[in-house]
Length: 321
Image: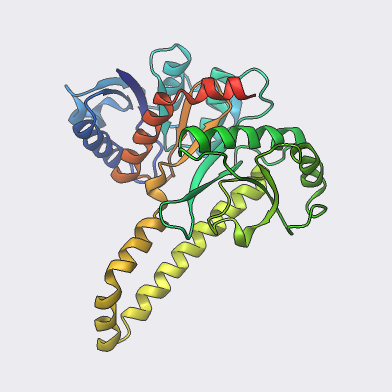
């Protein structure tokens, strides 16, 4: 049976919605056991249905690596420790991204041969049912050309084994499609990638979600900016569309004719369904949920963690690197 530890503290919405997500998931997945880590008085609804570890401290959002490692009684540290000790197969947290990254990297260690772990996440594309994975989306601020080359390998493996894409098409995020475009690091990474049969060249941000790319490689700073800009644009467009249909009686009637299409678009653009970002390159399965996690996003994150364990992604990366 797959065993997954959930850090129930640190979410902007509190632990109640995390608890509900766990309950919902366990109803649908009898082959998974959960270890809930947090304040035991906030986890009473989980009594009898999963194991509970009392760890009442919350890692602050701005906590540095040393501070996180000193907080031995924090829910985040205890969650990662369970993975280090081999007591669980995967871990999930919606707490401090920096803290979760630091503790996971320091305690679980990177896979031999991996220079830097990377956050990866599937993004929706305009082709229904097709996703593109982008990495790194924020594990680092700076990356070397060799690290970008390794990100390409990890992205290929993720796309192939988790999204079931045969011969994934890999691109390098750049400010132009020409071979000599890009930052100094990007240009050097291009040289390292050009002999990879999966590598198809540079791609501009405006085409990253067009549906023809399976993997888009970038440094962590640029990837995180792309992530936040995409979320912001989706939120803005959603608000503008809703306002347009609410203008008067005729626009409201018009909405009735396109309601099905609007629902499909909303489901496609819903970032919560992706399950968050996965930290690839460490010895274990690590899933970071968005800071405003609710029951649904928690459910999806546990579902992704389960699939990563089933597909043995950590060992796939060891073999690939």
